[in-house]
Length: 48
Image (cartoon, rainbow, N blue to C red):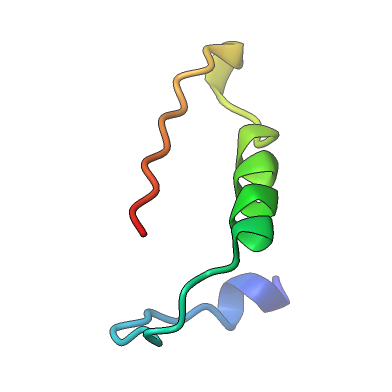
C-alpha cells in the first residue's frame, strides 16, 4: 500500500543514459510479470 500511495508522475527525466545491465535486468523482470490467462501478449520497445 505504501508504494501505491507514494506513486507520482514524472514529467522531466535526467539526460543520463540507462546502463545496459540495468536495462536488461528491468526487461527480465517485466517478462516475469503475470498476464491474463498466460496469453503472453507482452511487447517492449526500447529506445535509447
